[in-house]
Length: 360
Ligand SMILES: [Zn+2]
Ligand SMILES: [Zn+2]
Image (cartoon, rainbow, N blue to C red; front, side, top):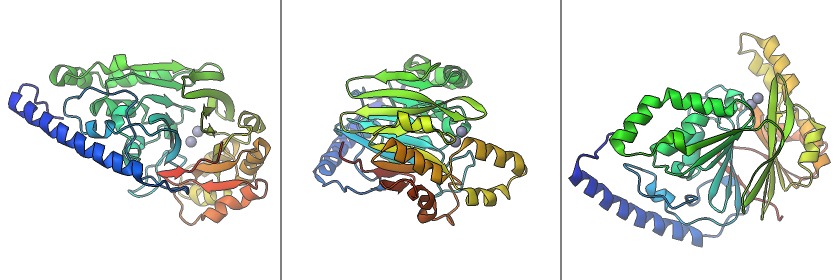
């Protein structure tokens, strides 16, 4: 981004633009608040989500207007990316794993596969409002964009703390990423008056499952899930005033996960379609090894149904679909096996789908 900090007249012009953009955003936000909410699953097209804190105007920020929209009260669940695996697909195809929970307008982001930043923008969440990020495990389709997500927030005006939680190694990933970006960060601090990103990010490694985080709006706990050969993979449970939501992360069939998800309103569970992976395996150079990994570390629809039934959840959302980019696998094909065991509401996740929350 070009810097204009030495060009006083342009600075004045930019401030004027910001005030008019702010007014426009406030008008749009208020108009959206008056609109009735559709209670079915839909692609996100609602108002921008608000900042956790009112932010001072950052230099050259395109997200200032969006961050000024008033808080949306309550809990919202939005699927940002629903594809399992690291392969980058063409535009318009599903992106890698990321899930967003908004609580009173504050974003809680679980996993950061490739494309998370642009999916957040697609969900109308200003990147400079990123506040809490949770990583389930260290496969790249869950964390390759962790550093870039925080950076992209900073690049669009983030001036407040970002808390990052994940298995051991997460803090080092942040440190290494910030070292990788050191020259850019220092240049923009000096040239554009930005705060030191290295001081804004607070990363915590979760050595053990249990309590992760709590504030007046939300309590987050973690449970270990089996996902060989990864040794430390977590599921997260979010409890708010309106909903309890469990994100499975990547896991093979894990009856203990049903205990962790007991009576949750929503369980977002990964799923793998065996017929679909045979087609996928034909496209890779090492099919035997990949087949072995997939079967040992992921969950087939029948077993997802067993977990949801044992947990007695109200709604089951299938996400982290493997393969997630094969349109020949229909929604019915994803749900057939699940429905043999689970009779509650089943939703096949799509990118930027907002899941309506059942009564708490
Ligand atoms: Zn994965
Ligand atoms: Zn994984």
